[in-house]
Image (cartoon, rainbow, N blue to C red):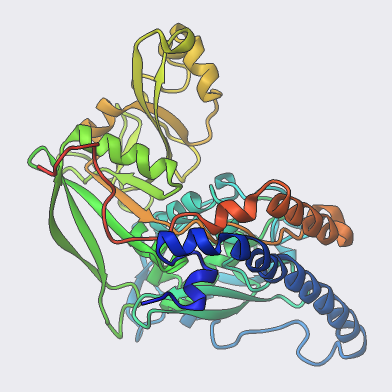
Length: 474
């Protein structure tokens, strides 16, 4: 049966058809993609700018600025019939009491933004843009942090592409139950500690707003800010992308694959469970998988199971492992899995190294290959190859052997990479930044073959990659 036009256009037809249709798809098909990715959004942004200018001057009294009264006050903070809700620091207070201690402040009036030109995106999208607040949503912060390694994945979530002076933002979220993308509309009134203009929850990085707007959109989608307290990184990734997600849990010296399954629950939008599979992998096979998923640009994170004999002293019930410099019950972004050789032309011994990031932006691993450790001085060649810089930024390296001895779970989002292209408005460059973004985007798309690489990129699958060439699952 021949493939459909849509399958051919998206390069998802059988290999023979992809080869035969490549000349047409890579020219006419990519021309249409470049129009939809760069030209039409550029025209859309410029048109909205004109409309906002006219509306702001002539009709300033009519719904300016925008106010979303459906998500405001105690309801937005976490009002569930008067029950007590967690403020994120192990202290439980009612939503009504929290509301009495809260000011709702426009984004441009926040303390960190005052005196600056507010922007939705400032410069590069990066994990340092994320500053977790009082609510216990480290799972969501870690999910954002991993996704921010691929800026297009973040930009594509926003229908609104730049700072909106009306304070109206539209965000795309994939609904795991409805199995479709929904658009969530929010205003930019941010809950702050009374009298401080400091956000109660996630804080902006300077004048950059995307993280706090995205957090608010998720709070509205899930019912309240309190509804974000505690959760699974996998659910966050699935709601970002709609792609397949799974976890590898350590059990009896093997890593068992478990697939996340969304559960329909009227009281919990994030309800989900995990279905065990028959797939089991050794440590060595896990290392091969980590390297392959890293090369495939998948999203990955890791966590440590809580230990009964440890004190619970983290801001949201985590267990601080002071000796190791790690946190149990906490999600870490997995940035890289690299096997590097010491010496010239790979002549020296090889080392299996993992790079991870604590979404808190501080409190890092204290063992071998930690920041400032003797290993970096001893192996200057490896330090240069990895581009390592000692900094208290939450990112650190450790050996894979230490990783499997400490961490008990690995999360993976088998991400579709064919959509890794978007229009960067370049708000830093003012009103002309969008022209720069359009020209640079088209240049990369056509001259640097970005469009062709995306066209034949990876599509998500529910099958695990080969753990090792010619190796069977144990």
